[in-house]
Length: 121
Length: 165
Image (cartoon, rainbow over all chains, first blue to last red; front, side):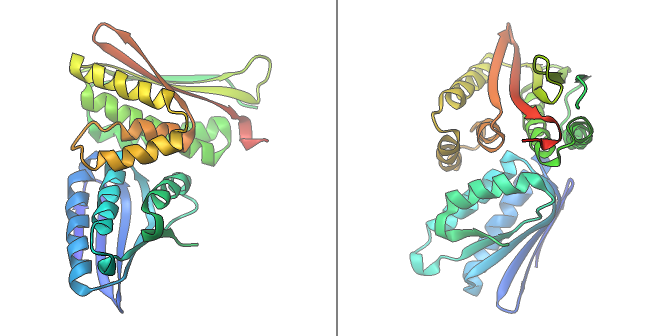
């Protein structure tokens, strides 16, 4: 398990049954930027170590994410893209339709990620 | 029917209250506009602008002004303006001018946003991603005004009360 609790953000990554889920709760803003970078870097390493082929990012309880934290996800996607193709894994976002900002932000990140990124539902 | 409303806030810069302000203005927009999707976008814009204003401020005063005004005779069509105002170093003012000009001149704001995402990976700070995000995700226009070492960033859009077509 990888966990960070900083400012108003609580993020936990758990492996189980052949997959990995990163759950984000609260607000990802300036205070969370550096911790989130570190968490995603560790998660990237863990996914490679375990040889998993996809990871779910559960945003159901994520109230808001600022552009700095958004950039942490972009950096993560670029890191996956730079892996040899046979080591690529997919990032699947699980959104909350009631958090309206997520719709357009996830569309942008999904477009950026191409085949590596998808949105559930 | 939305009523004309304006709101001003002036505070000593601290990033600690930016999220508090975002929640407050989200409630304000929802109450005024009766449109939760548009309100969420406006709250995002307020957060991004305010975070920048606080981050780059060089003294103890950051200002936020939000106004919702009717367009001509219509009380359903409203212009929403979000402004932040702060003092900044000449270097940061030049940097803001440069990125806002690029955001304004981008023929396709979404593609520009995508390009900036890619280039931001190599930049530790000041990529302008927040401003490009505003233009691409909310379609608000972005502009700036300078007065000495004061910089005012202005985001503006037209909305319809209650999300009416």
